[in-house]
Length: 316
Image (cartoon, rainbow, N blue to C red; front, side, top):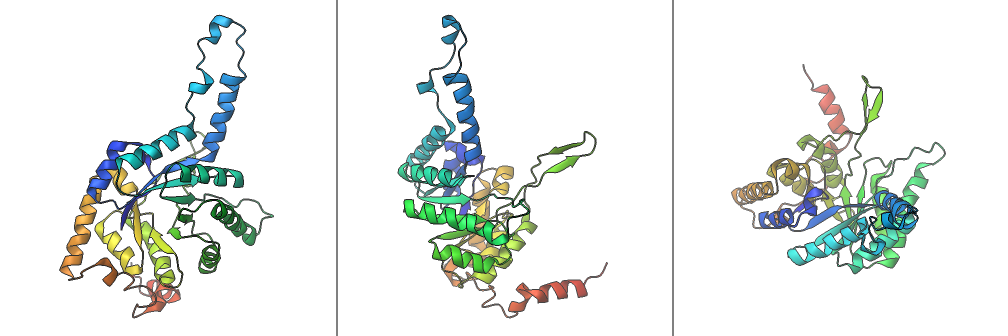
């Protein structure tokens, strides 16, 4: 149940092979961002197609347009290279901004040999006139259109900001989604008070970040007919075990592998195997979901009871 999520590690065949050797059951490629492709197309048109230096000799210093490799070509090429180098499934990740972009790129990735698609939907609802149901409809529409064009398994990576997550996942299930990945981390900007600037900042996850996904996976387990993936904060074998006990089918890893390297995946796998053997389980299936809301002795702890208990029992 160990799958490296979208990260720079998939840009290197050597790193990808190390992840496979360490026990990865699949790998998610780094995300293909539609904004990057659009900007690159505009830059290419400006400097290669529409450029006119006015001097024939100077024109020879410009690269030939048909020899220039765009970001999309590079992504498709890396996908094909990973497919040839690895025996495990390769999942392509798309991060789009337009319906046409989602569909067009999804079809191209299927043709290039991707084993599945991860829809890395990163949408911040900042329009004061856009209701919550309209935000949900964006997700549903892109899934519906893409589902009608590709036959690959589709996983949708969701944020935790939906007002009724179980209901929304049921809708996605009816539209043909195969899996849900919980949760997409929306990296927050920071403020530099000295230079009076808003700055982008990367805060890597830690194990405590798993708790939100763990809670919702425990609630959703066996109540939806889609694969449940836990992402964000999985750093140790204990993190993986907790997610499996809650009901996760698979756990995604990113920050831990960036910090410790691809070989760290083997450390996590060895810890998982050791725990399984110590508890005399023959397979993960025997204990998966054992502490989900359905089977937990105190299922209300996943809801309001946990909130009350934590506050009432706190002491400084």
